[in-house]
Length: 285
Image 1: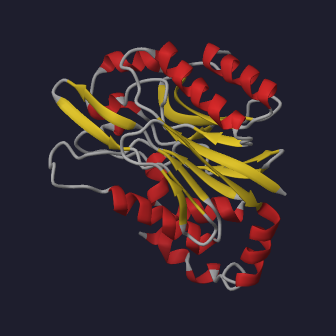
Image 2 (image 1 turned 180 degrees about the horizontal axis):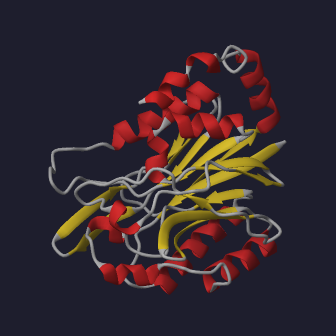
């Protein structure tokens, strides 16, 4: 089966959820015009990246029910345009808050929720203030255009996440992301490190990886983050075959033959030659 996937990036408008959704839809329109089947938006695309500071007012951004205008808009859109779109969102469940994702399929149906497993904490990335670590485990979502594995941002730094999703039957891996500068040390630029870790997942699992990041500079209470953009798509051997620059808004797209990729993965042999009996030490530390 041949499919076409796309990644996107844009600068969010602070405090304007409606307009950010409109920007996302406009980019989705570009993807539809290019015949894209699966379209990836950036992490928490409805708002600014509020985790740069610790401020309880941002808990008001959380969504407590899937019966919400956000999902209604994209459900209707996906059904009308026969496209699959993962939706990253801030979720409230009881007294807990999660960094979550659902997949809306080409029939407009909503998947089960995936909750971000790995929650970072550092200057400018205060996610542990807002998010509880996910309790869903890694998930793979079946669609008419193949099985998609979705991690969320910091998840992408962990090879266990990528390997688990591949073992669960993923045909492609998608990572909505928000990564940029380090406000405590402007000399640090982790863009290549960020890309390289996912290149490794792609090559080690013989699977395409698609990453979507935001662009622009966002400031909250004198903390400024300049996001790297640089959204990209790899082939199943870890080669970046499409990528964007650090500032532009837009999309990139690429066609894949999932059947050919599966044959390549089966013939390469590293899943055949795995030794899970030797890996138990990973869980001991």
